[in-house]
Length: 83
Image 1 (cartoon, rainbow, N blue to C red):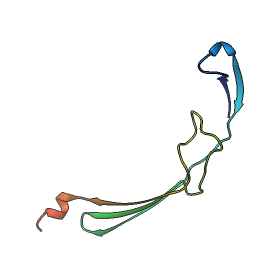
Image 2 (cartoon, helix red, strand yellow; image 1 turned 90 degrees about the vertical axis):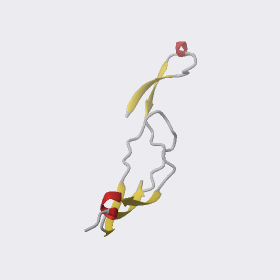
Image 3 (cartoon, rainbow, N blue to C red; image 1 turned 120 degrees about the horizontal axis):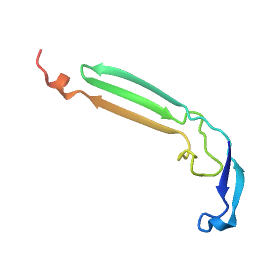
């Protein structure tokens, strides 16, 4: 992506320059399993292909690489209801 930016944000009178930013794509893989009535365990791999930008700029993703997440979701109403 080509973009026109100020050379110096503190002093816009210095003019602008054309800058090229490469495209990118962030992928996420997520799986979940209900292991009890009202309880779900989720595992996620965020930024699956470990993308790290060469430089951080306005539209750059704020990532330092791949992240692994595990979550537990509880439906209190279902867990506490009597059947």
